[in-house]
Length: 501
Ligand code: HEC
Image: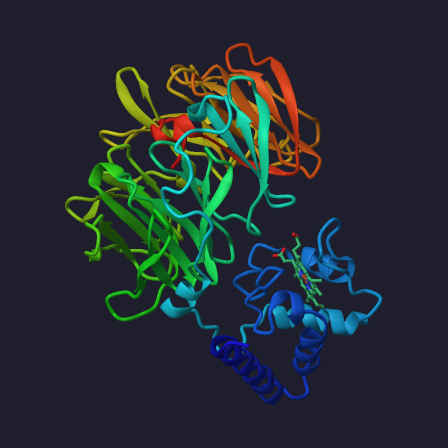
C-alpha cells in the first residue's frame, strides 16, 4: 500500500468516526457501517469511486430519489452493481440513501498531487501512425454518446454505418471536443476523468482525473491546451493537450474570496482564449492561451448577477446570459460589462442556442425549457424578430448552413416523441417527425453536407434515426443504447453555426 493510499484510508476512517460521533442516535452510523461493509470495495472507502462511480452528494445530483431507491434495491442490470434488497432491510436502505446525499464529515480532497498521481499515458504523443486505420472519411465521422452503458459509437457519416464502438468512463459530462484536425477527441466524465482518444487509431491515448466532479472540458483552437471546469473542488485544471499532463490548477474564488463551482468552460477560438462561467459568484473568467510554460492569468469580468446559462455569438464578442431570476443580459467581452438587457420569457436554454442568416441579418434562437415558444433575436440590435409556437418546452435546437430548416424537440412536454421542423426564413413550423410514438426523441445532428438529419431515440433500446433533411422521410435506423448526443467531426471542427459549442 502506498503512502497516498494509506493516507486515504486514514482519512476515510476518520470520516466514518466523525460521522459516528456527530450523529449518534440517527441512522448515519448504521449507514456508514453498511457502506464500508457492502459498498466501499467498489465505490472507494472514501466514496471517491473505484471500480464503481463516486458516491458523493455532487455525484448523485442528477439521480432522482426514486432512481436512487431503485438502484440500491435492485442494482443495475448488465453492470457490476448488485441489488441489496435481500441483504439490507428497508430502514437500512433508506438510511443509506440519506447518507449518500450527505457530504462526508471531512471534505473530500483532490489536489495537484492527486491529479498527477492519476495520470496514465497509453500511447505517447507521436507513437501511433498519423493515418486512419479505416477507409471512412475521417472528417465526416459521428460520435454517438450512448449513456445507457457508457459507450461511444463511431459512425461513418457517408455510409451511415457504425464502424466502431468503445467504452467510456462512467457518465460523460458535456460534449466530446475534437482537435482541429479531427484526430483526437477529449471527453470529461462526471467523476472528473479527462480522456484523450485517438480516433484515427481507435484507441485511448491518455487519461487523468482532474477533479472529483467535473462539468466539461474545452480544447484550445491552437491544439495545445485542455481546460477542465470542475465543481468538486471548485477549480479549473489546465492540461497539456498532447499527453494530458497537468500544467496548473486554478482555485476558483470570487473577488471577495468566496469559493465557486464552475458551471462550464468554453474555447473562444476567435479571441485565443478560454472562458469559464462560474456558478456561485457573479463573475466570468477569461484565460488567454499562453505559450508553453507560461501560465495563463485569468481576466475577471464582474457581473451584476450570477449567470446560469450562456450563449456566445460566433465571434465571441458578446455573451448572452440568463440569471436565475430569469433576467437576460448581453455582455460585451471587450468592454467587460453588460451592454443591454434581453427580453426573455419562460426559461430560454441559451446553452443550446444557434444562429443563422435571415433577410441578410444574423439571428439567434434557443429552445425554451418552460414554454412551447421559441424567440428569435436579431444579433445586431438584440430585438426579438419573431416567436415560434411549438408543441412544448424543449431542450435542443439544431440546424446546418446547408439546410433550410431548424429542428426542435419538445422533450420537456407530453409531446416528447415528436420533433418539429421550422423554416429559417418564414419562422413557420413546416413539418414534424415522430420516430417512435410515446418514446423520447431529441437532439439532431447533420451530416457534413447537411443532407441528412440524425435524431436520437433516447431510450435503453433506442436508435439513431436518419432522416432526409429535405423531404423529412426516414432513411434508416441504427440501434443504440440510450443515445443522448451525437457530434459530427466536420460540423464541430468548423464551428457550424447550426450547432452549439
Ligand atoms: C461489485 C461492485 C459494486 C458494489 C459491491 C456496489 N456497487 Fe454500486 N455500482 C457499481 C457499478 C459498477 C455501478 C455503475 C453501474 C452503471 O454503469 O450504471 C454502480 C452504481 C451505483 C449507483 C448509481 C450511481 C449513479 O450515479 O447512477 C449507486 C447509487 C450505487 N452504486 C450505490 C451502491 C451502494 C450504496 C452500495 C452498497 C450498499 C453499492 N453501490 C455496492 C458497483 C458496485
